[in-house]
Image (cartoon, rainbow over all chains, first blue to last red; front, side, top):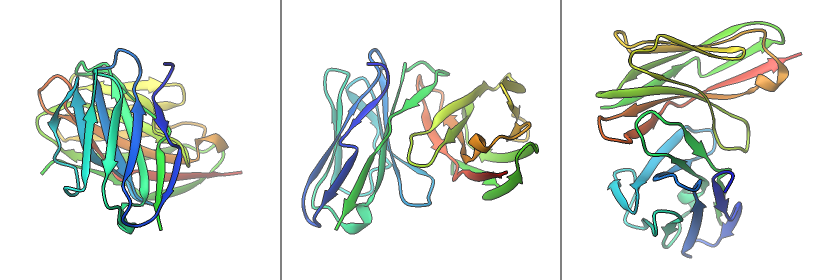
Length: 114
Length: 114
């Protein structure tokens, strides 16, 4: 596609429910990143994929968070048993995967846990 | 610990004036440094990307500098416009692997007033 696409753009969920966030990277981009941005805060790294594997999952805040990527393309970030502190904008970015190439960001999914 | 620190946290300037934003990092090994602009409610958009050997790079009215010895970078905005009002984020790519992990600063919020 023309850019990184994320869905849904907004999600309101009840505390305790599971949510799935989707990221469609730019076609051909092998590297994919997930970040979280809480209100008024900087971006917090969650996980990144090189192809279908995740060399670095160190940013996932708890075992309620998981992510997968299939076919080297679409990725889903799943949050189980959501808590109010999970409310944030979840941003996805992709890059060609070579060292000094740009990372392009999607518009993000705004998650609100009530 | 790999960190990226930005200053000032926020800045207000009058339209037409110049300003300089600072970024200090303690990231090793260093791969590259990027400046992003993030408008409210949107994903970050890349302004510049600099590798170890580059000292300065311009993109229109934006000029970024890099001193890899002192681990400092600056973003200079010339003849500011109202549309420059945004958050400016310094991002350092860490690691010697193919993609590296992007480490984000907290950002500087710039407000340009008429």
